[in-house]
Length: 178
Image (tube, rainbow, N blue to C red; front, side, top):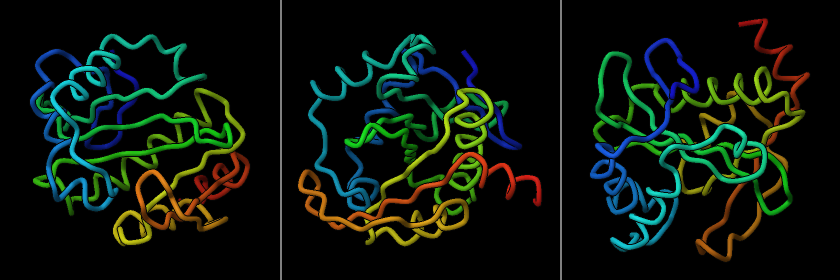
């Protein structure tokens, strides 16, 4: 099931063949240190993976959903697109990519695609994103689209996060200038 496309990427539902690359995104130390997050166990990976297979789009409104990111014309999972709801019950976006696909502009492209989907398809009024301040690449990406609204200590991940936010009206005004 295709969720959306960008110039170079497709975001769609996970399939069984994606499991090994999915696992890599939850165990690769380079990926995890920037979140930061401990590596998942095999049981945790299986549970998370199975929970996100065959997603019903109605779940996007109420719960965390994970979709695969693929280069157009390719079948290899390169990253994950996360539609989240934060502790303040606000819509939140997230992403992570396998290290072989870092530095190609894919996270920026995915962020724009997610914002388009949130605002134009789901019709939400605002979107947030939390980022570890020690992750300069993601901080820079979020600054392109959103405004920082607060920094806070993330007890679960033991780091300082910065929350970014954008309102639908502001995004649509800026988007038409591009």
